[in-house]
Image 1 (tube, rainbow, N blue to C red):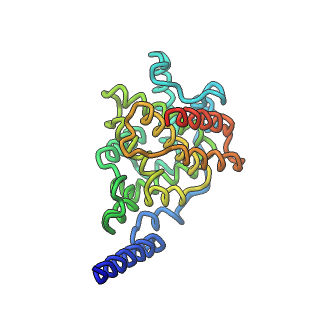
Image 2: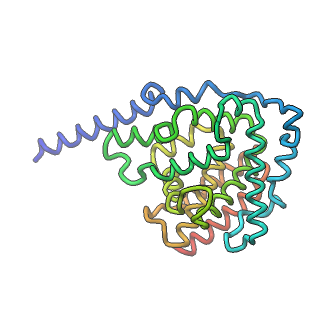
Image 3: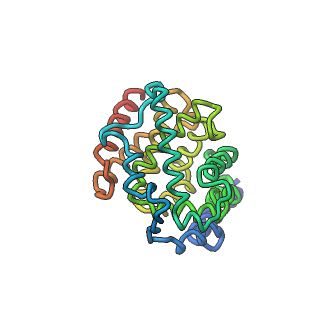
Length: 288
């Protein structure tokens, strides 16, 4: 018995050491991160006269929510006219992207709108492992390289370039796309092939797995906080509808994000985020 116990201890120690080695040297193991980092384009491309109607100021004004204090509305509150307007804003944004030099260089045959809805469908069909990630090294490795495996290195770099070039619009764009994604999922016959369960899987992945947390830590502060924020909104929605099947406790994540956002000055609508997070913390406490 004593010998078996020592063998078990040695096995666990070796497993943990290997996991740490893989994480610290992930650039050597997983080419997606190596390809994606170091190839960021910081320059904002110049819009030609032909595409002048899609300049940043014009697009940002069209996709901005009416008031900084307004949060993402409930689906039941979105009228048909508002839904049509939301679809128009989304298409306006992707038309704008199609006019940018760094997007044109990618030669997306079907355009950025169709390209990204296709990527969403791919990611929805093959979600990452949330429960049991650490059961073996292969599963951990697949989780760490999830986005590269499913979408490919070129698409990982494409998303990074958009985040870099359009960083001034990232807040209204993420709110718009989150609202639009919820609506498309609710419609079931929308532009993307996904369900609420898929959205929950990715939210739980970001907040509750080693690979998801590592992915967030490699992002710039603003992007990391926004991804965490919308993951929390998704988990809160799942919790309220009794769909939190992994039993993720969102309160610690809410507390950490409130602290992060409070100390960070790079978000235009930080007061809105803090107000929403405080409301979620109170409602989650009451449910508990």
